[in-house]
Image (cartoon, rainbow, N blue to C red; front, side, top):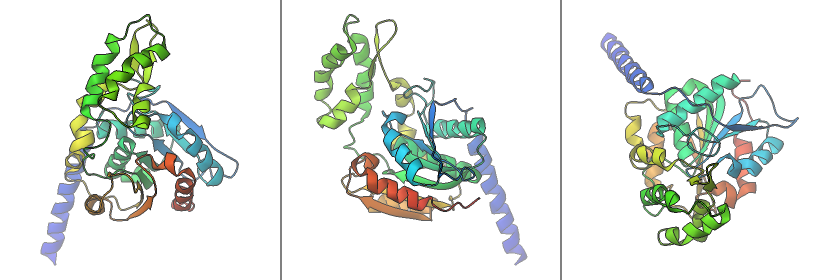
Length: 307
């Protein structure tokens, strides 16, 4: 018995050291652009739902769902532009650790002790990292069509697409308007992105800068710099971390290949209290089935564990 207690104590110290070493690799968080949604029915003492979007999107893609969540549920909702996206700063580093540190910085700025961490795709990996490294900050986790497994090979946002973004923007004649610039680049991306809606997501991220050059509403160089950790080898970045024991809701799309039987089994090792709900949708589940999505999230967050 004494030997078992000693072994448990040693393992606990090892686990704590791993966690300290992991946290030491965090950078200071970047101040994120955010929008808050609330209604009179919200329980303001309950941790809010903080939402981080997927790669190549922004907080604007969550606007209507966030409104509905705040009006139909009991929680305030805060949507953020991830670093290197939308109106948040363009900075070096775009790993899940960087993004998790940014959420922690937001919480500090807003004086939030806990949140419901909701993330889609890239944002989901940020929230998983936050929950595993700082579990005391996360009341619950909601993941939208993402697990720890590598991104499916047929996902339209390939490394090639972001490399093309870097090459294409400087080639657009500066005398063109924004709409003309988008028309100019359309045939270039049509060769590699064949789905019309996915192609539209890329084209409409083109921006006209103040000096009349063209750029993007996402920072391709930063995304590429952390491609392996974010898209391919995410699970490897979590080595040695203890499981998150809080409640987790994984909402997947039946038409997407992001969530599989195999990837759910891996999820259970890190998030043993995961419940999976599958809706008739693609990767952007909240856009394809907004009413069902809101209903699931409202039901999952209707009780406050810390109030």
